[in-house]
Amino acid sequence: MVVARRDMALRRIRPNGGPEDFDRWQQRKSSLTRESILDAAVDSLVESGYAGLSTNDVARRAGVSRGAMHHHFPNRIALVRGMIEHVFYSRMRYFLDDFVARLKVIDNGDAALQPHVIAVELHWHSVQSREFEAYLRLAVAARNDAELAEAFDPAAKLYDEVWLEEMDHAFPQWRNAPELMRLASDFTQAVQLGLLINGSTIGEDRVRMIQDELIGVVMRLAEAAKR
Amino acid sequence: MVVARRDMALRRIRPNGGPEDFDRWQQRKSSLTRESILDAAVDSLVESGYAGLSTNDVARRAGVSRGAMHHHFPNRIALVRGMIEHVFYSRMRYFLDDFVARLKVIDNGDAALQPHVIAVELHWHSVQSREFEAYLRLAVAARNDAELAEAFDPAAKLYDEVWLEEMDHAFPQWRNAPELMRLASDFTQAVQLGLLINGSTIGEDRVRMIQDELIGVVMRLAEAAKR
DNA sequence: ACAAAAACCGACAAGGTTGCCGGTAAACGG
DNA sequence: CCGTTTACCGGCAACCTTGTCGGTTTTTGT
Image (cartoon, rainbow over all chains, first blue to last red; front, side, top):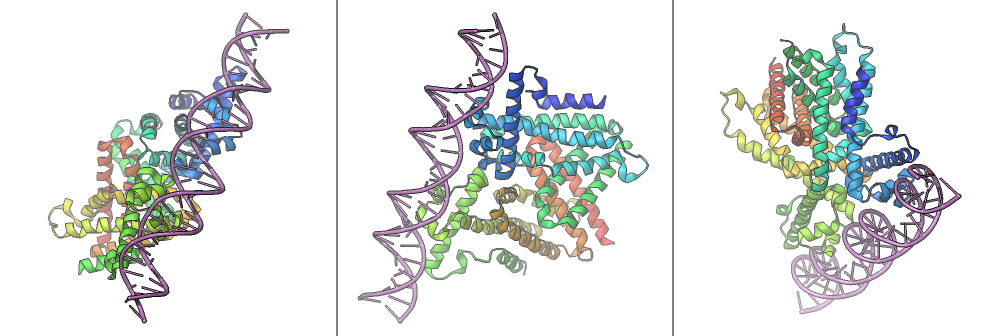
């Protein structure tokens, strides 16, 4: 079952579990406001950047008191730690939801509809999402904030690991050349991450040309993997 | 003269001019402390991120009083505007200095030493510099800060324009296919920018594989440009 | 029903940041 | 040589952020 596998992968990234995992009302409500705080934190992160993220602002956005915030997250770094988990979870979920939905309607005849081409397009879509924007902020901020990096780096590595396993499972065609698939995945992520940042400077037309070139690279790698 | 051209390009990016452009002692000294303030600001930016950059910290690093800071930059945004110009200037200069130095000793026999391959390697080197790190911080912060974006975006577009002219001049072989050269340049920048951010997560080995694949792409584009 | 525990509330102090301003010393121009 | 401009100094008020804590409401277990 595809969905069951997806949930398993997602659960590995969010060990704490979401609101749906609890039965008692108190736990459920607690997890719910916890979630709403984290969601507000992501909003604040995306709108104000990491250093500009203030617990004050987060509490206001989430509609809870500062006391409630303190109950769930005793200090700023605790909030950040929770947010990191939340961001990686959302990012993975955002892509996988799109992906499993799209895989149900593929037509193997057209070359432009080959699953790895679709994956590149969908990944570009996911890179433009709010969830990925939050990831970008954290990744950049972690370059100078040791405390943040300490929490971020392991989470990023775990995400990468789970991601590769998911891709391995989604593309059995590449099964006999896993390093080529990893290269295609890494390459796609690098290009599109760079594109996200430089896109507004170079304009849509050049972005599309790069995107097309990227698809060419992925298809060549796919060809090489067949042999 | 190669160096003369370089200086012309650099001057377009730094319209205010550097300390060397003034004769009178007062102007010179003023420009000198202005420069040292901007340099300290870049340090602070790289170490604390954009939102964490405080005028207080900058003044302390530069070894000037807050009053002197206020004299040169009446408020934070003025400092930021000056810093943007300074960052783009440094970034361009960092690459070009390396580049003209390296071009003097190329050997056209070996394929790995073709000028565009060297350019890719040197660009990767420049991407890892402090100057580029500062650019990254500004580019990411500009995504949510309208005031910053207002100053950053035009500067980035100007940089891109000057950059392409420099590349056009440096690689006459591509002269008859400028759109392919632009694509190669855009592609390189996108990949290496993405690599800068994801590199620590995926590790050196995978970074090198991506880098090799990138060189392959650039060489194919160079081949295509010959016809 | 009642005590314990969990969730939540609002205020306070300490510290840092920004913008502003009155004042000083050095350099320029006539 | 003297008035004016320029470069530079350090303190003050207003504001925001973080961490902390005593108190209140709601849920749970018995």
